[in-house]
Amino acid sequence: MLLKEACLGLADESCAALMHATVKTMLGVAGLRDLTAGDLPDIVEYWTRSPEDFLAAMGVDRERLGTEAQIHARFEKAIRRGDPSQPQLGLAITLNGRLAGYTLLNRYSEEVNYSHWHIIQAGLRAKGISTALYPHRIKAYFDLAPIGRLIHQTRTSNVGVNRMLDRFIPISETRFIETPDGVAAPGEFHIRYVRRAQIPAIFARASEPRLTQALQ
Image: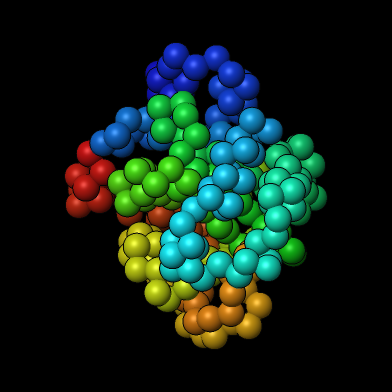
């Protein structure tokens, strides 16, 4: 039923894309599906039209971010092709079938794989969507790619994201990183590690009453 609800009233290619998970939130049905070419204009606009102070707060390195064409090309390469060796893998985050954000898996080796995610619709940030989907997102990474370990690298100043992650995965170390993964500028980051064996415990934490009540 949730899969049908996630695409209710929509008939574009996004609903034909493979849906990996859905979960009910206080705003409706949140989902994870394959990224499609139709998602890319909104993602490019997020990176190129967001206010300067918002990008600065995230610690974005403008040079690493690149031009509109470079951003588009980067995400086009992340559209899932079914190739287990694909180095970048993107999934769309949806709410009631419509694009709300995305998550990106950057793969380098069995042990070195970085996760990134962004809610690109400003009005949907800090509404519990990332928290509700977190266990499903982690499971999707391990289901879709032959990885042994996932790394979360989050800037220490990003209070909201770190608070969400604290509910599921402890900080392993905090250090200054000169060349962070993705498009971040140098800075101080919390590092967390996730392995497949931890997935059941992550889902168990997500079902704890205090967290489920906060998402309803």
